Image (tube, rainbow, N blue to C red; front, side):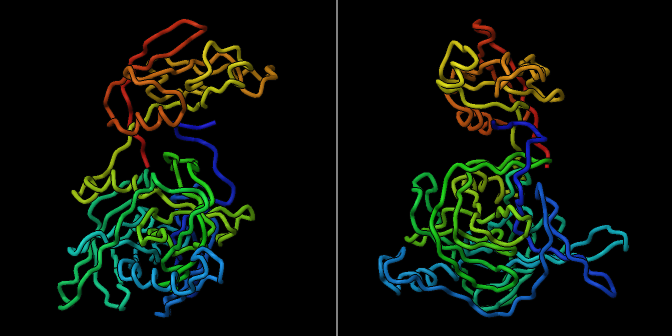
Length: 394
């Protein structure tokens, strides 16, 4: 089941890859980034200034060419920065300073850098460090809190002769499961670390308790850890195809267990005009959870169609509920795995929605306050319902 409303289920062991610590005068209390659905603690590790690289074994992703990964690393590394943040938080000790480490991707020669929102959230001081250890202060330009993206601008005017190397952004729609990738970033403060793996899966959803689910994520087994957030997932052509964002560890540990997630670069490219323009990206919200209608589900619920979106629940405070959209019966006496009685959304604004992803993609292309017309089936009868979309809040 998928959700388009707040309060969706959390994935076990999801850890947003920011590296945060609460510093007390006589002690260090380790904490984690507040944007995750379920957090665990990770120690803050200062950067050593070293560069850790890995070389594939013969017959690996580089097809036996042991120079392939080092060459790729040399090409991409100058486009990756370390991002250090200083902020403050309230605790039982009072107002405590916070320090964070993340990564970022250079977008242009003027100093615009793409990273995760959770890397810069709450920061009142940002420092960006290049591959050659040149550092500069940075400011937040635009943010996408619910999409977990941000653009910051670093000012290297005080470092004459510095030349920034923009990354090449690829096309994440062309990714194939099984293709080789590398991740470059700043895990545990180990700047310039590269790890190798493959695209393990596509279209993953990271559902959070207090935020819009991150959808269409890239799953990878290239090792990423706290501090990798905002860094690039790169294909073998040296193109950024994703922004490393989260890991999943069933044990609850905040370290890599073989499953990492990256935001597709195409999602970032869609948001970039607003981010670089200094805006806060807003996402439209319908306020339902549902699932794609399949032949099996159609037979189970005796639906008149085999495609569409079956509405399982409707957020009582959301726009769909206000417009009269009906969810399934949640009677505990029902033995079906999916309760009956929900509306089936077959289209929106005369655009067919065969799957839940079709509906999500259409709604995400709208703005809060926009009106859409849902075409639904209710007990076999066709109905059109006008809905005024709300805004996802972070």
